[in-house]
Image (cartoon, rainbow, N blue to C red; front, side, top):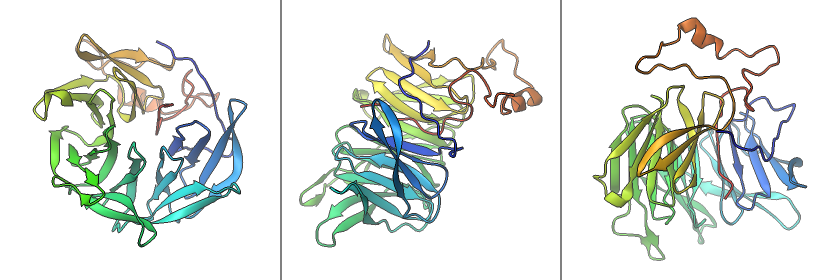
Length: 329
């Protein structure tokens, strides 16, 4: 199963893209080249072109980027800081301060669908939920939950009232984060769903159909329909390749997963059950390690990480690990 390529961006001076984000109107693309700077690209004649804007407020590697529905860009970094960027009428990008109160590095970030709040996953085992405070004129954080290890993944429910977190302690937890003009709701911070994934969690995604998906380092993707409540069963789909690092729902019954295999993979829900539909890019064949398959040797596995003479590991569009993905909304 192949997908058509809409746009391709390749910058000669950028070797690694560790995170990126596309604004909801697709006008802007922000990316980080595994460093502390953020580059802004603008859509011109159906192609993204690099602008002169380089956002350079962080002092260490940027680990997360996300756009709000109000075209605000959120950035977080290993330097324990976060900034909210907005373009002025003169075209310059201005940062707003965030009182993150982080003791350790920030690892991931996500805006709420309504654009009023954002969440930041921290190495200090908790999550910072940030909102705009008029009196102090900056974004202020309040902590939600406490895991046993670093928070590596975040996802908001479409209602903006629930937040899912994933951690290297193997647990995926959905919290009630409902707030009103008076402040936090009575159930604020209460876990609504807790799932033991059996391996550390790389990413989480919510669908518009109340399906929670999370992918783990054991090369599995797990689906839980929240319509059935907290005790609903979890569907466990094992991929016979390398682990996925990122997930994105592209419909109520369609999920795209990307990671160490260089190619995006499509999962579909058919007849009430989730299954692998196939790769969306050509790529190299992934050897089977399931029943009846022969597991590749160590030397054969190591060769998969070596580039070919052309500089690409296979015929896929990507020549190395896919570190992030996001849908065009």
